[in-house]
Amino acid sequence: MILVNTKVILLVGGLGTRLRSVLPSLPKPLAKIGSQPFLGLLVRQLAGQGFRDIVLCTGYLAGEIEREFGDGSTLGVRVEYSREIDPLGTGGAVKHAEPFLQDLPDFLVMNGDSFLEADFAELLRIHRMHGALATIALVSVDNSARYGVVRMDESGRVIEFCEKTGRVCPSLISAGVYVFSRAILNRISVGYSSLEKDVFPRLLTDGIYAVRQAGLFIDIGTPADYAHAQELLGRMASYERIPAKA
Image: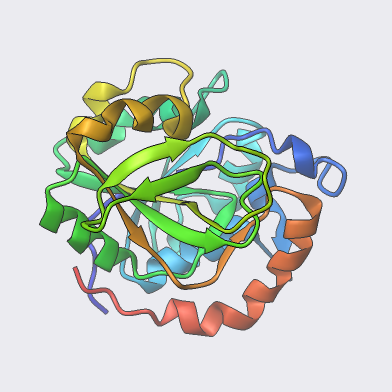
């Protein structure tokens, strides 16, 4: 296995309010898929592709996540924690984790409540090829009503971020997987902010690229999606063997 010398930020501090009816006492990333937590699947996926250094950005019920994963050694990785006292949103969480990202040219960021079957090292390669400030993994969905839509040109450069329209139509959306160059940290303010709503739209002229992905994508944000996520178990063997190319 090729080790990927890139740190991964996993955003796991959200409140998960839409899942409270089926998950009243646990943070959303600890929702069980079969016999293991959803977040455990993400960590195993990363470890299977050669990533070894992971920072969990915790917030809501942070202690539960920290007790579950400890230092990460049981999964073959090294886990550190960037713990939020108050909710910071996706942008604020990345900025809060800045002390863990010293001297790194770039890093991978993933939402802790969605799964994307993809080759992350290839995403890193494309990001570096473009010299991008940020590179976003996109997926096509049949119903984009509850997602923001991303539009890009033929070169893969993002030209527009569209807010949720509520319309049922096929579109390209962010899969919640990003590669960031370190310089992006200088463009995110301390405090609450959203990557999707506050950070990315301001950076279009700075060079944000997107890469369309064809693999399985599941977001466990609603009870229906959480039920659908159980099919991940049948794909585990295949995604853990995706080769690392960085």
